Image 1 (spheres, rainbow, N blue to C red):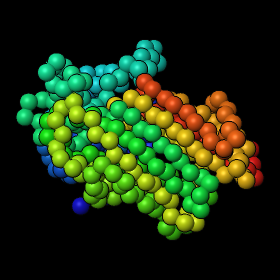
Image 2: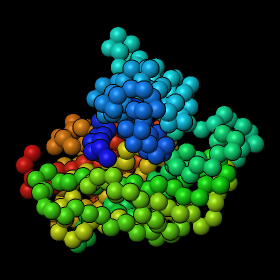
Image 3: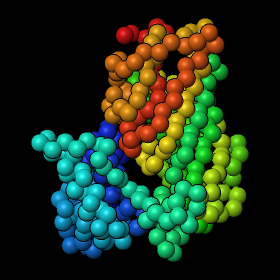
Image 4: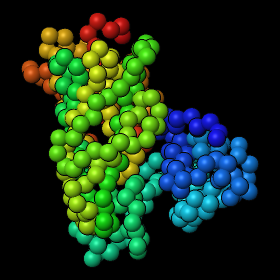
Length: 317
C-alpha cells in the first residue's frame, strides 16, 4: 500500500479545487493510485500528480483518470477547459466562470420544487443528490470552551437520499503543538450520526443518516453542536468554505464581554490563505452591547471562505 496523498489546502485557486474533486472522484470509485495507474496506462506518479493541486494536469491524463473512475468524461472535459482558461493570465475568466462538480442532472419541471434531478437510476448518496440551502451558526466564545450550534437545511435533488456527509475542519491555532487535537460533534435533531473516515488531523467527518429517504425537492433540517475539548486553543476565525452548492450562510459570534477582541474582520469570498492572515485587510466590525457580531452571505463561490476572523485581546497586531 502506498502512502496517502497529502491534504489539499484550498486557497481559492481553481487548480486546487479541481484536484480536490478529482481526488474525490477517485475516492468514490474506491481505487488506489496503483489500480488507477494500471487502468489509465499512466505511471503512478503521473496520476498522483494530477490530484496534488500544485499544477493543472493535462487534458489526456485528466480524462483517463475520469474514465477509469467511471466519471462523466464530457462534463469533466468542460470543467478542465474552464479551469485552464481561468489560469491563463491573458484570459482570466475568474472563479465565477467555473462550474465544479458535483453536477446535477438536466433540469426537469417534474423533478421537485427546485426543478432538478439526478441521472436516471441514481442511487448515490454523496456528494451528489443534495445541496445546502442555508447554514445558520451561533458560535459561543463566552463559555468555558468554545462551542457552536449549527442549523443546516439541505435539499434533495434525487429520490432516495439516505445520508449526507458532514465535514468540519478545525485548524490548529498558531503555536499550538500539543499532542491531542479534537472536536466533539453531536446531533441535536434531524437523524443520527455515523462515523466517517479520518481524513487528516484537523478534519472531522461524520455522516448524517436521515430518518427516512428523501424525495427530490424535499427540504430537511438538522442541527449540530460542535464543541472544542477543554484547554484546546481555537484558531481566531470561523468560516464557511462551500465545497458544493451553498446558498446562504448566517454567522453570529458571541464574544466574552469581559475580554472583547481587539479587532473583528468580515471575510467574504476570500482565499483560504487570507483567513489565516493576522490582518486580512477586510471590513472591520464591532461587537454590540451583548458582545455579538453577526454577518450574512449569499451567492457564495465554491472553495472560498465566508465568515469572521478576529484579533484577541492581548494579542500582538
